[in-house]
Length: 348
Ligand SMILES: Cc1ncc(COP(=O)(O)O)c(C=O)c1O
Image (cartoon, rainbow, N blue to C red):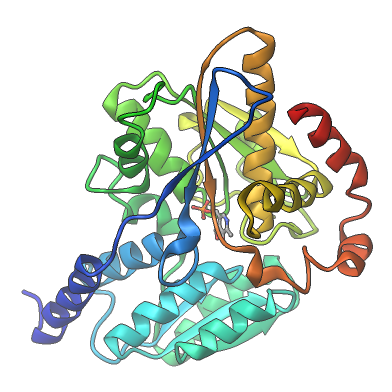
């Protein structure tokens, strides 16, 4: 039986959910692709600014219902930042201490937001070190390591219950092509792609799931070879996506197609999206949109009409000193101009 505190905690999360609204599905007008509709599920409008708001809610409920989180439990998480921001929000809601373990290079804005919600940041040199450091802290503090990279895929109810896939298909209902030909997503934990892929199968839709993978990520090679021991010495430069090891939450069998996206193409596409939406998006949204544009071009070449949905994962305001700082981009990503020209040619 749940303790009174656990009952209260679950009630707090459910009440917070009841007070929340769903995120928008934005239609992007692209005259260069007649008969093809492109949509962005705008996850930046959650209270904590990213798609990770959904995951954090699910991980807290999962931990509470498993008996892992109790009154006073210190919550520890390995993160590239977005999940930690969202978990700090829920930890504060429940009055629990929270520590985020992140690489030094994590966007300053995310660090500020974690601290705003009363969380503490513990920095490590590289993305490869976040797992061991989190386990160690959890042992030392007798806390609970949430471990999104393991539990993201199972903490989310993929069958329905208003998950992100369910929401996308409901919002598409009155569109000319309500069942998307493709949904494009990138993978950090792989939890979102697992939820979408399973939901498509469970509901019997003919939608194909493409996962777009940045440089220095092992997901694409794992999807091709199924070698789970793959490692990358260098971390991904696209914050939130691309991992140096195969994460347990990435489910390759529900992915129909994968695409390698150069980092400069992701950044160029994110910057181009600002000209279409009138606001900035994060670089992982650029990766997603690059994949969606390639598919739109394929459909156009094949004379097909239909729809493509992808995700706007978070806002670019978090990355003003990186992806929206030309000096940083030149030093860390390289020349994005050829990719911008390629986009301009694609959408002409
Ligand atoms: C900005 C951003 N985009 C995309 C993702 C990938 O989502 P998932 O972990 O569900 O694969 C993340 C995950 O941290 C993220 O922070």
